[in-house]
Image (cartoon, rainbow, N blue to C red):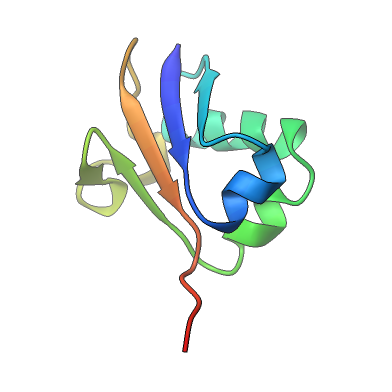
Length: 82
């Protein structure tokens, strides 16, 4: 299982701050989250940042970044504010 930490509006969508999801890579993880939580995909379409063990996936292998047991994935939706 991969530990998934979500923030801001994603907490409202999932109802939790921390989730545990089995997934082999980031893309597979997102597909499972999209299927489980209505509105999750639409929220990320506005923009997002994903970290795997504290490293931005843009500097790893993007959505193909492999995940292993006990990895921590942090998903940040677009920040709002004024």
